[in-house]
Image (cartoon, rainbow, N blue to C red; front, side, top):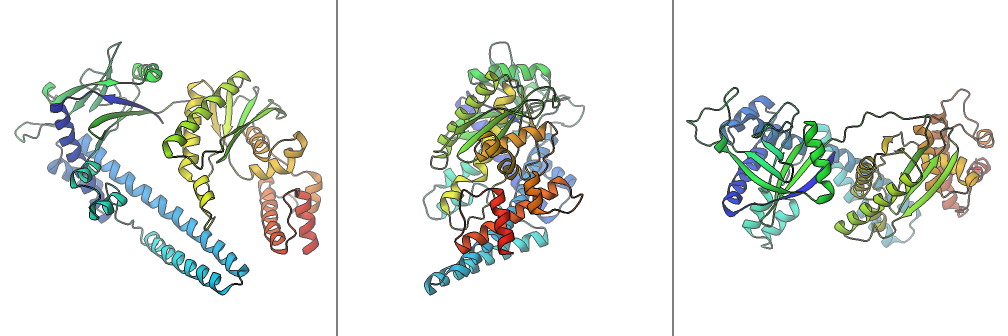
Length: 481
């Protein structure tokens, strides 16, 4: 999805109307959330919302959809929390085995107990299929409210600060622009406007299918779009494809976020060169290969400050980096790239630096910004299976082409997008001795497990060296077996 952020010009009267509608919409969303948790059926919830809050089925459906998305994201987070806590407990138990000092051991045991209690809490939710109650407005803000650090007016604004309208291609607004029925973006050739449909509260007025919506129930707001994005939005509106609108209030200013899909039906062109991109917290590596899979060019795009800066500065660095990558790829004549969407597991225990460096949202920002920038520049983007790309690059291409590990991983990503399979080198295959006829990915999986186990054992014995090759790992495994 591609999101364009605009600013609405709103006078005092229209601001009061928007604030009131945001309050009603968010109240409907919270009511829907509680009803979903109780197990009420969708049709019943939407019908109830229509009677109590907004006399329009579409607005009620979108309030329900937002509540449903909140619960869905909570369930996804439960799985992530369980996985991370299990990894942290395992890491702490490994530390406990090495610890000799009684005070140190007591601290680690205390941490393990705390982690296990948290793990039991999340596991109980997973087993029951439930989610913990959400605090709309933010838990930290609620705590600040209870401590008197946040006023009730500020708290209400945080809870009632937006509404969302999801579009469909066959829906039209006040001016007949297809794409969204209740929040229509209209372009007159020079300026953009947002038309918002607010259903009347008077119960005597008939509403429903087939009954035309009255013109007086619409409000029209001038919409300012950043100059670089005017062309993209105008072109999208001309296609008549759907778009989603979210109006957000921040410090008495109203922002309009317009989101739409960057539709792409392209397929991998195996007669053209391919770029592979390996995303990492402190460097993005890009490697280009010929259509036959052979190495062509590679470059690292470092971002060493990324783990240390604020959220806004981080986004600025990522944006600048993505523009530089797109410019370099276009200069090299690349029209297609491949990347993988990775997930950094928080198994680092107490390592705060790695926690900040490998934060999932930083990686997601990298991925999203890069995909959007490349597609805007006319470069097709594909994703590939991320399994063992760093290991394959390290074993096969790092020394062959004199590349860094991440550049070698990017080379594997590009080759995988072109359909090439990676076989084990003969020397490694001889030392590893895989089963006859074992699938290549399964063989790499066996090698991955062997290398990981050997590294842990070698570190424990004080034999490990950073300069080890794959052959060193396998030779050491045979030696200590």
